[in-house]
Image (cartoon, rainbow, N blue to C red; front, side, top):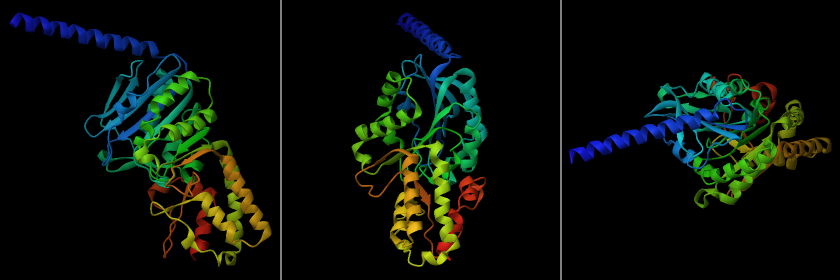
Length: 379
């Protein structure tokens, strides 16, 4: 009996060694080869009320000769590590990082640089997982005293590469915000996020279809890919949660045009505050305590306007918004959601929402007249 146990132990040892060697060989074959796409999944799972999506992610995607899937995963139990999802959907650990601050832009920069060096591609997708806070950013790390990635930190990190085609917030809520979109307009060509609540459960149902699509259409560009991602959510959304999902994709090259037109609208009211006397803020729908739908706000602004020239300018701005949007999805319970939120503090005693450390370097605060408009509105 002892001989049998010893024999089985030896066999299992050699099988394990062989499997590990084959995985290493497969991984080495993928290194340093220029591919069409690299998908970077920044999974900040060291946070309360959050789970580790690594296995759910890897089960649904796999790398091949055209695409790399890399994950930076940080959890309460295991700390941070880089993973490569191989051809068989196995998450192969590449580098153990130990305790990692996912709320530090340096962590994101190193991840992007590592992929550029070892898994280069013509185009890069960067996807974030964690909670979201609109203009406050995302990726709070409980092991780092709640440090998080501000929008400015994300911008700095993404600018470290000129190959980013698409940035996606695949679970963080409220990241489909005008503040986030404007901050990242020079970092990527396209943007995907939810203006209201979201979760990885919304993405889990369509990831395998996304993987199949991109492999079958490897020469697709960001615009076509964004349209397909939104379409796949519509088709394969989890029925339990899909009715409450919102998701938009934005052409970042058209964001500046919208903001220029938006500023002209706001400037008119800043210079003529009496024009807001009949504007009823109680009719503005607030969600998440501090957000409103940007397009719905423009509709409300236009409906109360009697000045013909200003009314036409509001309509022009609405057209600029539509041109900026690539595609949009709102579940059947999400009425009047048009893709993008904006911070709208509905308080009796108004204060500037863009305050505190999370707003340091917030470009929308300095390059938009929104804050000045809010002061006039609540004066």
